[in-house]
Amino acid sequence: MTNVEAMKVQIDPVKLAAETWGPERILTWAFENFGGEVAISSAFGVEGMVLIDMASRLRKDFRLFTMDTEFLFPETYDLMETIERKYGVMIERVYSVLSPEEQARTHGSELWRRDPDMCCNLRKVEPLRRKLATLRGWITGIRRDQTSSRASAGKIEWDEKFGLVKLNPIVDWTEKQVWRYIHDHDVPYNVLHDRGYPSIGCTHCTRAVLPGEGARTGRWPGLSKTECGLHILDNPVRPEALPVQVADA
Image 1 (spheres, rainbow, N blue to C red):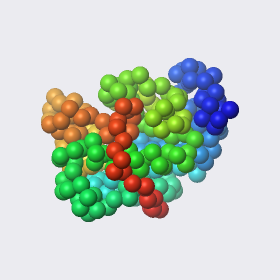
Image 2: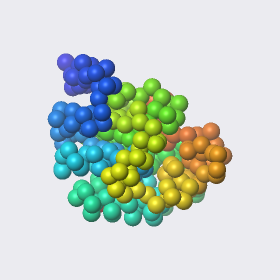
Image 3: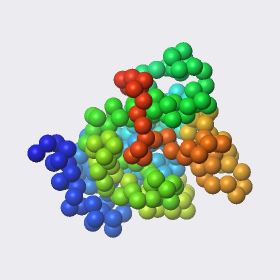
Image 4: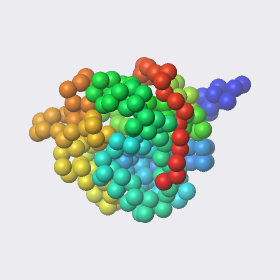
């Protein structure tokens, strides 16, 4: 039996049962079964902040990583520093091998305007793929009501795209539940949320939303694109993506 087959067998008995578990139990199961080979992946939206806070109460040495596209908002970098101070965790920052300047020389300036899918592949998807190749499981803060591609996500599932176990502890939560946890536990969050940014990505592809607009309308405004490709199966991988470089925070 291959390692992949063994992991699939390992989660088969718990996938259905896990749908009745709360997020803390999902996290506990992940830590007990995968130890240091499971990590939280976060872009530090409020959902990710809930998971970081929960994890800190269950395991002091939990692992946390992020795709640092080098195009993030200053407020996001400020929040990352706050997280490291408050929770005593080192954020593992994962980068594309192409610096912004190298990307511009190779693919032309403002790639995010001309081909946002390629830009996301270069700066997010391929770096994530290589990071996940070092793990047995990854923990995400996605929710089913965010996008149509997330509507059928399970709390514990096999990630066919990246070949490991994917855990989505608050996938059945509502936005209201997320914010209630944030306020009840005094969890830090990105100040941009208070300025009309319900979903926060890169500076070039994120704007504040207007009254009455959907929460993800501010992502890739003017395009039908709603996902960067991390959580969908049919995102094409461009051959231009190069090996990732990882630097300590």
